[in-house]
Structures are given as C-alpha cells and as structure tokens.
Length: 427
Image: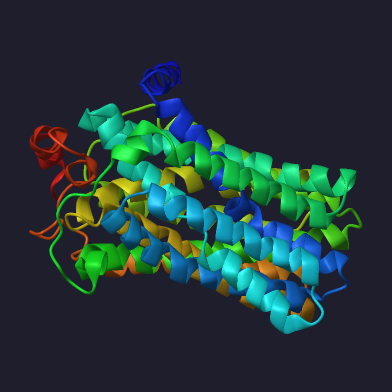
C-alpha cells in the first residue's frame, strides 16, 4: 500500500497531472451521477419505476451514441474544440429536463437524450493525455490504475452529493448543481496546456475507426454486460431503499459500492502484475461476477451496505486492467475513440440493465432486480472465455496508446520507449 501511495504521489507531482485528474473527475460528475439524479428526480415528480428506468435508459443510449462520435472528433480536431461545447450542450439538456419535468413525456425524453448525447468524452481524453504529461510508459500504466481508483472517489462522493443536495434543496437543484460543476470541470481541462497542445497520431482512414480491431470488439462485448450489471444495481438499489422505508439508504448503497471499488483499486495498484493483461482480466471479471450474487439476499440495511461494498471491490481493478487491454488493442491514431467505445459499452449496458431491472422490480420484487446484476457479471465472463484467442495478442496494426497520444517531437521518442516496454506483455 505504501509503495502504491508513493507511486501515485510521484505521478501527481508531474506538471498538470493533478489539475487534469481533478478537472476530469469534476467534469464527469453529471455523467457519473446522471442515472441516480434522473431516478430521484423522476420519482419526486410522481413518475413510476418504469418511467425512471426508461429516462435513464434513453440518457445512457444517448451517451453510448455520442461518446465514440465525440471521441473520434477529438482525435481529428483536438480536445478544446469538442469537449467544452459538448459539456455546455449536455448541461443544457439537463436544465431542460428540470424546466419541463416529466409531463409531457416527449420533451423529457428529448432533454435526457440531448444530455446523454453531448456528454463530453473527458474520460477517454484524460487517458489520451497521460503519455504526454508523464512520458514514461510504466508511469502511464500506473496512471491507469490511479485513474480507476480516482473515479471511484467520484462514484463514492457523487451519490452522497446528490443525497445532500436533495436534502438541502430539491432533486431539481441537485441536477442543476452537478451539471454546473461538470461545465466548470470540463473548462479547467480544456484550457490547460496539455489539452490545448495534444494532437492524435496519424491514423489509417477507415470508416470503422477503432472498431476494426477484433480484440477491442471482444473487450467491448464483455463490458456491455458489466455495464448491464451496474445499471440494474442502480434501479434495484433504489427499490430496496424504498422497501425499507428510507430513501437516504439509496445514496449510502451507491456510495458503499464506490467505496468498495476504491479499496479494491488501491490494493490492485499496490503491486506490479506479471503476465498478459487479458488473462488477468478474465480472473478479475469472474471475481466481480461472484461478488454480485450476495446482493440477492437483500438483508437489513447495515448488512446490505456491506454487500454493496463487496460488490464493488473488483470493479476498479477490472477497469484498470481493461485500460491496459485497450492500450494494446487500439489501432494507431484512435486512442480517444477507443477509450470512448469502452465508455459506450458501459452506457449501452447500463441502459439495458436499467430498462430490464425496472420492470423486474415491479413484477417480481427487489431480489429479481439484483439477479439481473449477477446474470450480467457471468455473461461478461463468458464473453471473455469465448474470445480467448481473439484477445491473445494485439492485431499487427495496433499501436500502443502512448504513441498515439503524444504530440510533436515527443511522439517518436515515446513510441520507441513504449514499444520496448510492451514487448514482454505480448501473449
């Protein structure tokens, strides 16, 4: 643990690193808390679970469509021209939802669709910036672990922030405040020197972009089901809180899940891992799936909070390991787009999980909603097991992320260093 903390501290002492990390996390608050905020707002407006799940699903689908498109635009035109305007439009969509409410339905659905569609790809953008900020390939891979740990802080604090804002003001105020913070976070990132100077490496013209990598497609197929599991927990957790008669429990359950992921990610980053990342990912996803199963017990609030924390322990390690796999599988010049596709699979999966869990809760109860999470976890593992050969090695055209992300004269230097660093990890 001490070694990991020291390594993380060294990373954050690099020029711009702390600002970029914090700005990205704050900028992603609207997206990280979006499904929760929409759920609470819809229920406060008198909407049903099915309506809340439907609005969350549309938001997730809009996000899923927008992330790779905006990610490709970032690769082509740079970060400032895309990230900040997108953040403004996304916040405008949520503001429209507050203004129109949930009745009539068409404007409400249009508002969440706009908010999701224009969510800026800050997550992929940060991972594109790490190589030019840090320079050393081993530090870049450690930064992926730090990234996964840090975003769990957001997923821990985010639900508590929503709960606090609802308690102090209202669900509408919660939506407006987190989206205003998101715009400020995006602004902090895009006016920084690394963001302004970053340029993607040259890329092969291909309409599929990053999706021409079979290994990346296999990874995305698995992470669809990881997203499905998380989306179903969002709905089932709220149903559990209402079932025990304390809506504040919902925020604690979601925060506990994030805290578990924070602990798991910190422990994961405490050591260097040998062997192919793809093989390690299969083990981690299997453990993640197993930890979802106890949620179906739905015990008392204290025990349920502990089970929520347990369900999150392997989430951050799974994400950190997946970042390395994307690093190995992404075609040259598609770095932001490739990472954005990973976000997209979460969006589509979470939307599907919300859409399935809502009716399951209404028809069969809270336990059935949590059963969707367990099924999603094991489906994710099955996809990885079925695509072992596809993920065995990066395609010949793949280039490591550092080469794609560096800019100017640093590009060639980092590309050569990263190629040497990555070679032992080839399957």
